[in-house]
Each structure stands twice: as C-alpha cells, then as structure tokens.
Length: 481
Image (cartoon, rainbow, N blue to C red; front, side, top):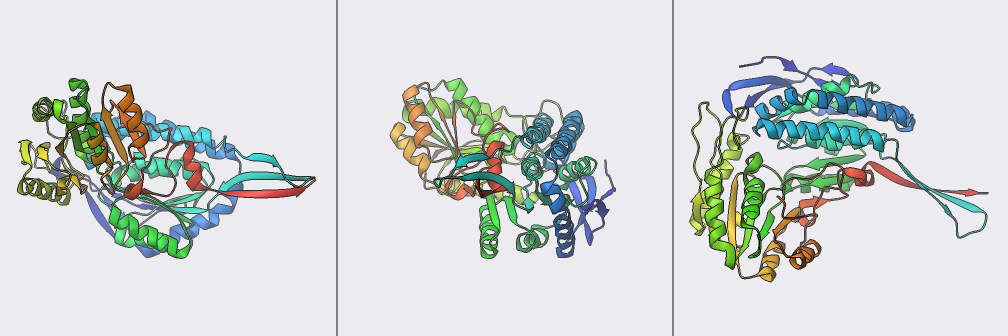
C-alpha cells in the first residue's frame, strides 16, 4: 500500500508548499510509503513566526472560553478517531496497534485536560507590607513558542506541548520529527479546523539542522520546548540562553529498575519486560538497567530470559504482536552496535541479540537481554534507545541504590519490593524526577508532572498544572488604594 499524497506545511491559517518533499516509510514494511510531506527551511520558519507574532496580541488577551472550546473540540475529534489515528501511528513509528491507539487516546485526553486548565488559570491577591497598597500576582502568556518533538511519541508529545501552549494564550510554531511526520500532520489538520485564528498555530516540517535550528535561533521566538537527544538539547539550550529565550528540555535516560530479594518474582519479571521491551524499548522512560540483589538474581534472570523469548515480534498492525520493529535503519544499526559492545565487554547474552525475519521486510530486532553485566559497561552507561536491557547483580539494597544513582541521567527509576521500608526510602533517595514502586518505569499519567533531573531534563516540568511554569510568565502588580 502506497500513498503519494503530498502533505503541506500549515502557516498563517493556510496550507503552504515546501522547498522539497520527504517520504514517510513504514518500518514494518519498507515497501509501504505512508505519504509524502513537505520539507521547509529558514524562510518557512520566518513566515510562521511572523504569522504567530501577528496573531499574538489578540489571542493572548482574548477570552479564555474560546481557548477552552477550541482545545475541547481538538480533544474530542482525536478521541473519536483514535482507531484510525492509532493505525497511522503504528504504521509510521512501529509501535503495536494497541500501544498506538493508547497513545492517541492520551493525546485526546491531554487536549481535554488543558481545555479545562484554560478556565482555571489562577492568581493571588495579597496585602502589601505597606499600608493602603494591594498586590496582585498573575500569569500571562510567554509569547510565541517553538515546539520541537521527537519521533518516539509522534502524537502524545506534540499534544502535551501544543495543548498547554494554546491554553495559556501563546502562539505556536511546531516542528515535528522528520522521521514520523504523519501523526503530527494529522494532528495539525485537526487543529486547523478547531476555530483558532490564523497564525495562532503553525506547522513547519523538515530536518532539525535546518527547520529546528532556524526555530531556535529566531529572535521572534520567545521560548523553545525541545524533546530529543542530549547532544542536540545542549545545543538548543546554549542557543536559547545566548539570546535570552526561555528553554525547556527533555532529553535522555538510563533508567534503573531495582529488584530486591523480597520482590514478588512474577510482578518483577512482568514489569521489567514491559519497561525494557514494549514500544520496542524506544521510550525515554524505558528501563535498560535492571539492578537485582543476589538472593533473587539467578531466579530472576532465568525467568526474565524465558519471558523475553516469548515476546512476539512482528508487523505493528498485526494481531497478537507484542513488539514492533525498530523505527529506522540508523536506530537498528545503533542497537546492533551496542549488542556487539555488550558481548565484547563480557556481559552474558541470555536472550535475543539478532535480527528477526518476518513476512515483510522491516527493521525487526529480537528483544535482547544481557546478564552478569557491571555498572561500568557502556551498555549500562549510555542510552541505547532500543529493546536491549542488562542485568546487574548487587549485594543488597544499599548497593542497589548506589548503582541507581551512579549515572548522569535522572528521568525515571523503579523498585520491585514488598518492603514498605525500602519502598519509602527509595522514593526519597532515588535521584530521578519520577519514581515507580512495583510498576514499570515506562508508563505515566497525563495530568501530573513529567520530567527528570541531572542530564535528563532542564527547565520546568511538562504536563499537568506544572506546565504553566513554562508557558506563562508571572507579573506582580501594585495598586494604591
């Protein structure tokens, strides 16, 4: 199945041609072209920023009911079309259909949530320390925001950036990942019919080195929210700080999952399998470091290896498939390189490690598990971003916690235990922005804060009411009574 439809940019309330096109190819079936998408450049970004700046005065000070109504319409249509949009997402990114439909539903719920938040922007009224003076503390839109999203969640992450930006009265220039433009374009098409004034929302597609860089450098962009790699994130931060733009970064993770001797073995094995291998391990919250105490180590490794071998790999749209393909040839090459590194470093390969042949040609890789690894190995230090996990043996809880925190990252961390003592201590002392007890590290709610510490995140949190910290600026007003 091939679709030759050309999908255009959306700038200033109209669909706009690019300087070229890019094909969107299905990683489950390399013979399947999903569609062709316009490629933009610096000039397209400039047009989009100018359109956003022209729309900003009216939108940022206009009625909050209009914002709420538009966001609610967007959320309702996404939810009504979740099966269709889920199939598109699975086809272009490679996660299984059930996971993809779940991601689409999450996107719809995010827009619904921020429709409500548009009506709940709170302030404070305080007395001054000086008699006869009143003090008001309010939040106002930050301005025109540039939003740059990654390929692994091609509709949910755009949703959790776009929805709060619009809810709080900002105008948007959105650049999706060029590897998966289909879901982002479908979302933009829905937004284009939601009743927003021209220029409030703009979509410019293309390569990060051109469109992304132009967005980050543009003097008309007041703030940039970026989700992607650590290296690019640091460049984005440096560019934004240099010109005084507000910046928010969500980057890498090397997330630990602890399994203590007292853990329920079945629970621990299942949550580790889900964290490490579902969504093909292509989640920034995935667990790739499994830190297991010595009393349960042997039983855990045997059980997880058996569970890993039972994971069915196949076409993302096929029924009964547990794990789809890796997203691209480059990502597959990276995964395979780390598997080779793990073997050279002396880790014991207990499951997977090889390509999988399916009915269609695609980027299929067996979920891969290493045992007897050490914390200093590259496979335990660097983010792989694929279905590759390694088990580290430790003596006790104290050593486990030390290994957990021995990383430059700090996004998500988990523990499997039946001990209230250790669970409580871990929640306080794990150096991560999100902590899970007897749950997969990958899997979070849309109405609460998302973000990490150390090299994983920079700036204020995403999602939930905490999104206001980034998408608004605080004003303090004094009035003489």
